[in-house]
Length: 184
Image (cartoon, rainbow, N blue to C red; front, side, top):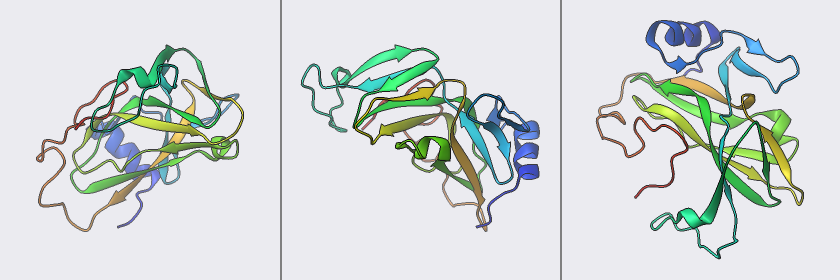
């Protein structure tokens, strides 16, 4: 499974709308970088956040998820409480080709501040805005910045297409927009 280079990512984004909006270079002046890199794409954080809180004594349960578990915020900056996390999403909308699996890794600028980004793999023929879990592992409040880089996506091309894609399985997170909460 080779990792696909910048020219392949550019071609797929421009000719097949794999990433929208797409920036064919790295933006980095005064911001946490985003856009096309050598072997990946650095996505931006949208200004929509769900910050987890225990104000109402809710329990986080993936089988019975309660919206009382978090507060909603919008804005250019989000402050995540110590040892907590927030859900957010990418600015970019992704359309994954049938023979590709996408892995996401956090950006080093945030990782060096104790901020970890978690995303499950983007499966073949999945599409949507990517919901991100952003964990603040520090004992201090931590800031993340909307419309700046938050994570990098690596595109792995399979030897052959799968027998059944995410779209064909009618995956529950297909074509998600906005911050998408857990579904059963």
